[in-house]
Image (cartoon, rainbow, N blue to C red; front, side):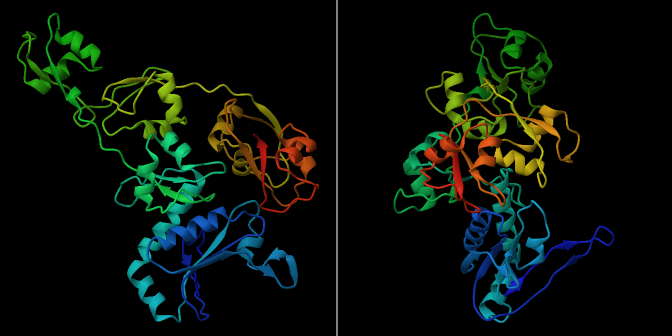
Length: 390
């Protein structure tokens, strides 16, 4: 099995790659005992999309102490989510040939999976953003279609689905809508128009209109056709606080992603009855009321793990607490932003967790957690997903 360990020295910046053989075919992913299998599963699925055979994603225990990971890269890396990606077997001619011809695609598949898992927009080497969505607990094709501003039929067609069943962690390709015809690039002069009023209405300048239309004076005639500036021939207009100006190529989904909101909220805030947008259209940005939670930093905590546990982002925590770095100290008090309109909140059980400690962390009770999750005892397992808020 080919194993790649990326070890980068700060002194010599060298990458050390190790290979091992074992007899078999296909890719595998090994993840740490302390982590859920979601990332490993997503990585293996993405590798499978390159055409490589996939085997399994799994954990491996140390024979001398089965409470510990077999590999040091899992065992000695603190509160991170390390994975070992085994792309194929070195003693299998088919695997070797596939790796020789597709190593870039395989590496890119892993990068894309990690980006999607981390919530970071993924951009391919060609500069084309790939729109994907990872299925969450409670998702249906209908709810996803509404969220992304598309239809169930389009999702089924785009992803070659044979039925409507979904699995948590499944990666769906998002259908790209056909861009609407942008008649706003041309403006027909109306009675009472002036270059100044048109420039004001389309968030540009009189000089820019003159330049685009080769005008030698400010005189206009009714019915005259004027070329209007757009994102391809002028700089982007500046939005006022609380608003967003639609750019060429924008969709409700891409704007929602950019602004940290949803398609439904944008449509509701702006009284939209369809997903069609026009260049220069001014959208009001939905506001999210938050109730901050006070959290005391524990041993092993990181901004990433806290953000994940509370369904927020590292940047949101840093901004709220005026943090200039990611360093934390045990006992440090943090304010954690929690959206009041957040849908179902879940938590993945970590090593050392108990129902009591989780209830305390989220400001709830053990009985409430047991009721929400239909638990008959207080026993938990690492990687178990608990519903915190219905």
